[in-house]
Image (cartoon, rainbow, N blue to C red; front, side, top):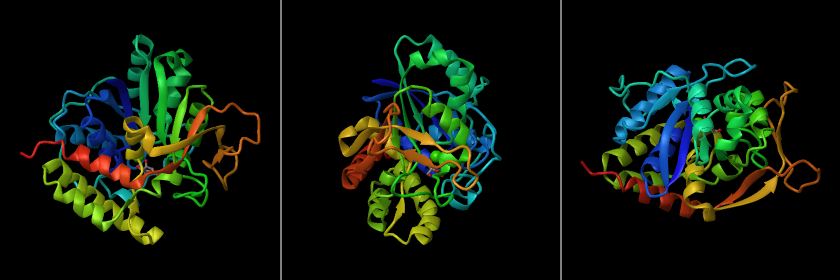
Length: 313
Ligand code: BDR
Ligand code: CA
């Protein structure tokens, strides 16, 4: 199985992504979960990550808390989407599973320098931890197979400002540093996640799976859709972060194109905008596989099949 580290800011959709990874041991080995400030402050994202590990009975996976603030901009959270806990819909308590003492950035640097086998980084929050780790020691790039991240938008403009997607806007300077690092990147943004609609039918299918993990996934998505349904007026809210694990498990569900992608860090008006050179009109390095199409039915079939793998008791 592919060794992976998941850097995230749970977030209901980050939580579902963790479940997708835990349900796929034949394909991926989750070495650790690192968390960052994003949807909610880092004290809550690390707690939420541990709650999801406990839900999936994967207390063996170490959870490290990382950066509490973005590099340069003021913190931006999204309680209006995810609720005050970040994972409203799932009852929260202080998990019995401990938090690792090592800071996520130290963990990333130590692990990526020491590894013999390059590790895939799955990133579903602002990119602060990854940027700081790459700044601390650019040599860690040798230990990274690729970064598979949820972020950015081309056709679908923005979801937190008119022209920026949340993860890119929450720490634009970190995103810029990661995109300039030269590490191969697969980038899945709103252009595909806005096709992955959690319709009522799909929510009902998720609930009908009948095991406690699938029910928890249902309850979280039933909460998070409330906001997005009103916002987009579509037949269901978009499901963002699980597209990263879906790409790792079934890349055939997506179409990607090698492009140069840059992040706006200068203009207050368009801060965090992802500039995707889709038609390759400039000579910049085509270091990003930009996802522009997804098989939504295939994606949800995969998700339901994996959620059904959790035990019924
Ligand atoms: C991204 O922003 C967060 O609110 C979600 O968890 C996802 O990572 C979507 O723009
Ligand atoms: Ca997220």
